[in-house]
Each structure stands twice: as C-alpha cells, then as structure tokens.
Length: 206
Image (cartoon, rainbow, N blue to C red; front, top):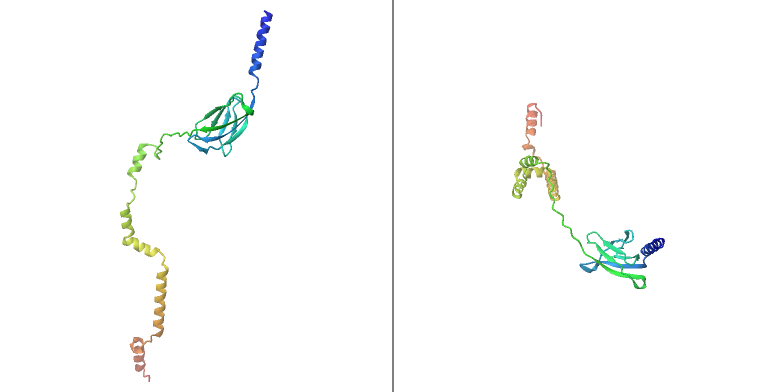
C-alpha cells in the first residue's frame, strides 16, 4: 500500500513538473495592416498576450512590433475602429524567430439616432411654438431695406464716402471764389438809402 502511494506521488509530481516547464522563447515580430487594403498600415495597435498574464505591447507609428514571447502563446490585436484579431505562435519555430503579417478588419458601429429637444414637456413646446416670431422671408426683407424710412435712416447714419466729400469741398471752394470777386452795389442796399435820407434830413452836405 505504501509503495502504491509512493508511485502515485511520483506520477503526480512528474505531471506537475511537466506542466510547469517553461516553453521555448521566440522573438515575435511583424507589421499590422488593414485587411481591406494590404497597403494601409494600422499604427499603435494594442497587442495583448492572453497566455502570459495579459501582458500588453503596442506597435509603433508604422505598425511594427517586436517582442519576446513563448511558443503556443495566444496574442490578441486590438485597435480603435477595428475588430480584434488573434494570432497563436506555433511550436518548433526555426531560429527562435517568428514573423507575421497581421491583417485586422475595420469595424463600423452604427449608433442609433438620438434627437435632443430643448423642452422638458410638450406643454412647454406648445407655448413656445405659439409665441414664436416667424422670421421674414427674403421678399419682405428686401422691401424693408428699400423703404423710404430705411433709406433715410441709412443716410443719416452712414458716413459720407470720398466722392461725396470731394464734391462738397469743390462746391465750397467755388462759392468762396465767387464771393471774393463780387462787389456790392450801394444803390441796391436799403441800409445805404436809409443813411442817405437821414443825412439829408439832418442837413448834411453829403
């Protein structure tokens, strides 16, 4: 009986030792591509080793990755907008190096349409709808812009342009020139006639 128990103990120990034996190391390398176009590289892909305590490695900008793994390790490739892709390293890899070209498929998720309303209840919507001010159409806006009141308001508020200022300056200069060469006739001046009559009445000689 003791011999049988000893044999069973040896078998269990041998089985446990064989299970805990570490598998050969492999230099796992490759590039991640888009499955829809083999020329499009997918950058910054997350590579999770599901066999080795979910250790994570990220590929670089060019989609390239290279790290040490074990034979028969299961690795999962994930990226935003792409479906997960799994790769298993085979046994008896030559030269302890395994290179792959990983193809991951784009994944499009259609979200349901969501409508957002600024009213909490239908009563608030009815109230705002009844009191809403309808904007003028293009024809009504044009009529308001060419109305007399609108034109007068724009005339009073808008500044004069260069042509208007030049015309006003020219008119002012013309008026100054005309007034400088004009002479006032005393016979046509009522004030001069009044002074003459008063002088005669006072007996003046002039």
